[in-house]
Image 1 (cartoon, rainbow, N blue to C red):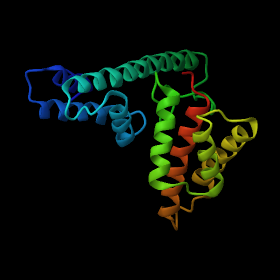
Image 2 (image 1 turned 120 degrees about the vertical axis):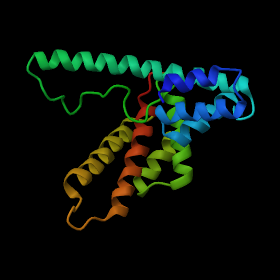
Image 3 (image 1 turned 45 degrees about the horizontal axis):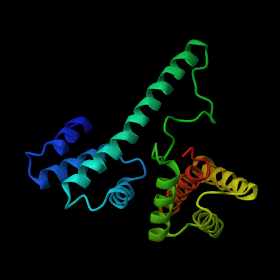
Image 4 (image 1 turned 135 degrees about the vertical axis):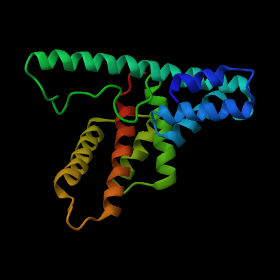
Length: 200
């Protein structure tokens, strides 16, 4: 089923609370901007225990839908920009051209959600390397306000992970544990970037 179908079930007060909660989880499976578990916990922190409170469940749906609506607008604008670029002969997007909504980004609450997700991920898994761990800790301490040195470190760490994933990984003798560590690093770096460069 679609996000909209699940959302209608969440709003339907004639349905049992358990069915409405399951429908909300269906919405979250279709749009979880900072990952399923982090999005679930962020909503719970923001609106209260929606598993037991139907009013909080509706507030959680409103909050999630507001972010999704912003994401859909960004998707449409990106698609229009790409069509225009293709008509001009630029068939491939530039490497630094921003993607709609970014990665691991909760539109409408960029900094707060990024900091929540960063703390959630870091407390569960730590960081794959010391310099990234130090950057995460400084980001959490400063609530996303990074100095020039930390922004440079952020860019360097991202470039290092990108290089490993595109050129350094040995596909003939794959080390999947290292690959998964690089995925964890990318997620943490995305949360740091989103906290540092947030618009709100």
